[in-house]
Amino acid sequence: MMRTHTTGLVHLTSFNEVIHALGGTTVVAHLTRSSRSSVWNWKQTGRFPAKHYRLLREALFECGCVADLTLFAFSDLPTEQAAIADTVAA
Image 1 (cartoon, helix red, strand yellow):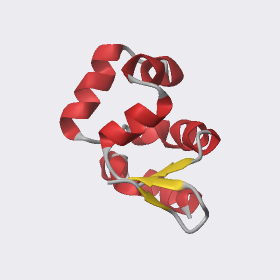
Image 2 (cartoon, one colour; image 1 turned 180 degrees about the vertical axis):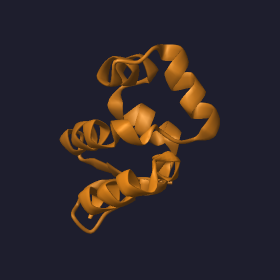
Image 3 (cartoon, one colour; image 1 turned 120 degrees about the vertical axis):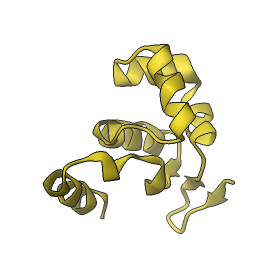
Image 4 (spheres, rainbow, N blue to C red; image 1 turned 90 degrees about the horizontal axis):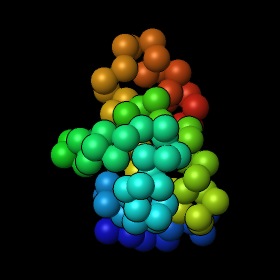
């Protein structure tokens, strides 16, 4: 469910909203240098790999959007990297 963030950005709360905002599966695959089947596999979990957080955050910002942090698999990172990701997200 999309809603406007306090910064005026549209807050995206689902995987499909992010894909749609960025222009579709093919565009996301190209942005992340991944295959379309990889993006489809991510869709099955409903989360993007944490390693793509910064790239997708910047692309979404250019579209006037921000994605919910729960859409990224930060919990799959080792503890030290997850702490760094939390700092970057803040």
